[in-house]
Length: 547
Image 1 (cartoon, helix red, strand yellow):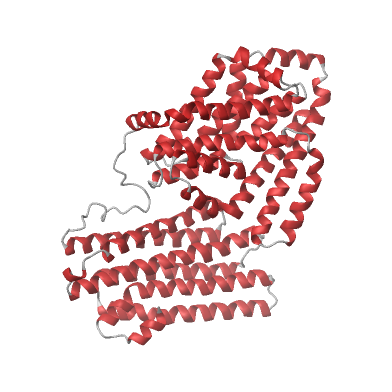
Image 2 (cartoon, one colour):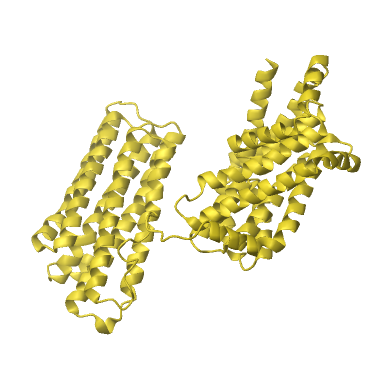
């Protein structure tokens, strides 16, 4: 039962750290990314940015994933990225320093403050409520672990076993590596090491060994979870891991002197482990900083850059087209990229249908990530076509370029609707425990199936420029309007007949019906209206109203 209680308290500790990280990310995520991009002018400012962001997030893994993403996009050099990671490693030590003092009495106050902010605050304030609740849970878990372990450590057999275990330093380091990799938090593992050392479960040298393992384990996750297709991103995450391993091996080489020195400086076990964690990361940063440039060159030789053609959302056909290429070649390549937009949007619609049938957070996030591909492709198409010299464009070519841009823009806007509105409705319903009725879900699925068919027709009209196909497609807008009206009427009929549906479920379903009709409008406007306008079959005023 003691082991079971200990496992529960460790889980509570991990959950508290997770709440702090998620609260800060929800409240300040975009601002933190913007702050990091503005502080990448040189290695010193990059180091400071990595330290500041990780001090807020308490997750060097999260900062590492941000940095590898920027490296993959070419927003920072490898040397700057390594400096960010050095700052991130120092940033994780700050909360450990704070919690090394006995401030457990603040736990109820923090939880109360967090609860009040979460219940009564606006969206951003509610996220800071999560942070306070998370800190309170961390303090409560640490204090409870100390109380729980007190009778266990007083047992003579336990003391003998732990004394023997404390001599196997390399084994304890490996345990720290595995634990940190598993829980994605070096902070939680170092805090656990402090608690175990305070209560005599581990000696101070053994607690230091566990903290050493945490410093390696936290560098493994960005290697495994970062971009596997980008050599630039792999260099950064792998370089951080290799440097951490080198630092730990250096400490192990002089380990017989480390423990006595730390214990002489600080007698309290928790403070001794926390101080070592801080000194190790600061000392390692000072030692490695002058060698970042040659280390970056070594990594570049070890992982040479390759032509990246498989990245999702990266242009395939426009990539190799030079600026002075013949106009026909440019338009053909842009057309092929636009067809990729159609394929991605169809995946989003199918994913939306699956999410309605079985709401799953991972599925929803996978579908939402497809919208980033639409944004990237649309931007690439627009950048290429807008850059064409107008003096080299004749009338037919200008019309064709306009149709490509209209098709691309409307499909990207349809994807935005699915991402921000429709998937948001599905996620809100799942989060609040709301389920659509069987008939209501069937109506939504029928509309989505109709949208997939309309997307196929719109893509065909875009390719062949058929005037009759454009007229048929334009008339489908009236069909979707009727579908929304009929579904809305049937919905209210079910409510009047006493079918049990909450008012919140009703509001969400009506919002979804309306948004599906808006998606249909974009699919129709993507190809039908440009062709009809060019053929004089559609009045400009009608086009203006429709778009």
